Length: 474
Image (cartoon, rainbow, N blue to C red):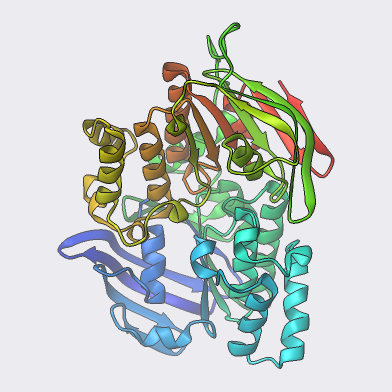
């Protein structure tokens, strides 16, 4: 097969410390290659080294060839190929979208300035692109008016509009409901059927299965197993791969709620006939719910149906159209906390994580010794404290979000897709910590997720939002 992209002994370093071991891979015409591994294992850093866009303080060694261009990994000639020969579908859509530009214009701009299409053709093609991923009605919205899943789809079509034959997709289905995951997988496959190359980074094993082709399993910065997707994901050789497959939520035992939500305990919050609209569209109506300490409520439904908005209404961040929200009295405002779907938006971008946590401890007079304890439980290396939010992986930043919330010992956590950036092993560890907060500390939890299997495994109540309104399942 023709190799569109070849990397020879490419490694990534932070000064004298090696983060990614020397790795050799080739990307063939029309055959997908999927890189699977633990959060923080170096998958995204390897992709950034390939493109030539490593964060400050990191360097790459080895050799990379893209088409007719071959150069040392530390050289910058590959940047001239961005958008034309190689493009990246980013892990964090908010960082790649212009907050001042409507969705339609962002896609049109790539068609005009990168692909060189006339304005009228760019407008028509951009509209078709948005419609193909279910964003036709959102063409006039700004990024902040979109859900996380909708923003991810917008970033996808904007990046693809330049027509680059080589696509590196970094967690392209993160935060999407099952139907939209299928749509994105179909789009990725369609893009290489006409002669392109696809390197996908994902922690979603089902995405890897559906893409097919080859997979490589990465652990602690090193490829430990590789081969056809069918073979590796059905009969793995390496112990880490077997552990990864066993961590699928479909294999989890159901949670025993025990004494959670004991009869007679005061409710942490209660919703009465709640109705909320956004952007002139009613998301849900006549929704009533009562949640006690220690209860975990799963909130599921397709992207854009109002899951995050319902959580914001409970926290008092969104005013309902009708009905009421009653929160338990006698609690500090900090007792009601949110884990954001996109943690990058919840951290000061130019402040070290150590400083951010220190400010929180000082402001609320917390025990700073718990930081080290929680970092160990969340498998966060102490050296990460000296980095900016943009210098850690999305999964690591999400775990820092949970650490920050748990420091406050909340009465309620609205966890908005808290594990969507995590590999299956780290996801289970993080969800276990949320469940522990419910079981041990009596913290109530609203778990917003697209993963029905995850909700079934840990939630006592499940609410489904969607086109037909809402429903509550025991």
